[in-house]
Length: 35
Image (cartoon, rainbow, N blue to C red; front, side, top):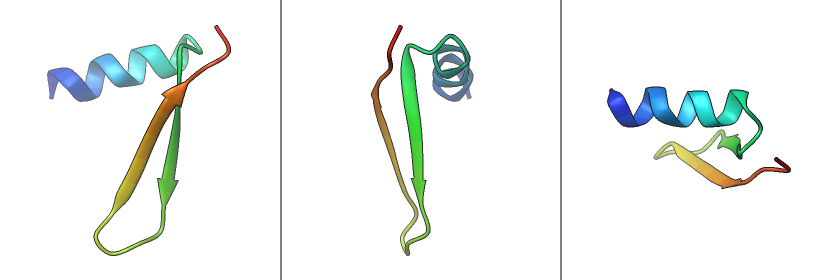
């Protein structure tokens, strides 16, 4: 859970961007944000 909360905080600050894909198995990508 610690990684998830850290990634959520980074997304809120604009440091990372989170992209979710509707696939099986589930796919999520993180990329560098603008900040």
